Length: 280
Picture 1: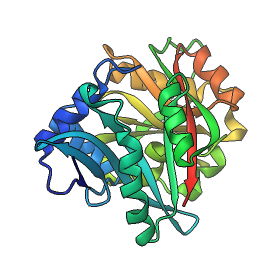
Picture 2: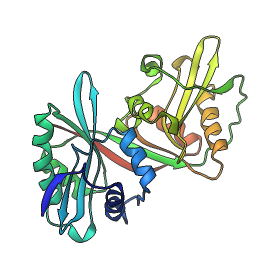
Picture 3: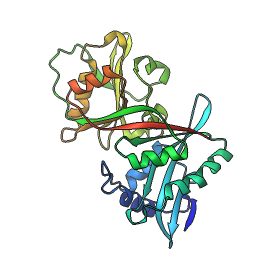
């Protein structure tokens, strides 16, 4: 058994290990090499800070680690932990963290985040044993958007830039790592930005991934809510992706206004997750 960083592992081997690990998961995940490369780019995954376990020259477990900053402090994000089924029960996640945390600490990265599905009690106990603590619960959604009935007096345009200072006041909660503007902008061409504009500027917006119609961010100016702006934006996403269900991940479970809105326009809860944090 060898524990090592992942920069020398080919994308083919990493994709194979990823898919083997998540086959039969609560929500089965299967990626091709292009999608995994997109994930590595968007989530700022550093393979030299990511770790794996190899047995007989086969990658059997891994932790993908994204790096970013928040409030002028470096942070790491667990972008995926996987163990191939036949190698489970050997405490490989704990062994990888024993290797990973000193490596990150040495590089002045001491705040660590992840999300874990609330039903995954085994993983939750592992992360708690490592020292992670629950910071909040988040909810994921999926479904087809129903057609708005309310008249719409505005036009929707594509745009290609928005600053966080412009849209922060539109938010009810802070986006989690995968949904931050920095994550979106790292792979900007893979996303579509739609906005409702008036002479007063931007009134509402939605940003979604072109590959799977996943909405990464949306928001409505608080002075223009209950005017169906958000509903019409989501319906535009649906019209552009008529055969796909629209999805969102990691909506703060305490944000009842947003959750009620999403349910009203046709989305349903898929899973709930805990966001967890560790200070090392």
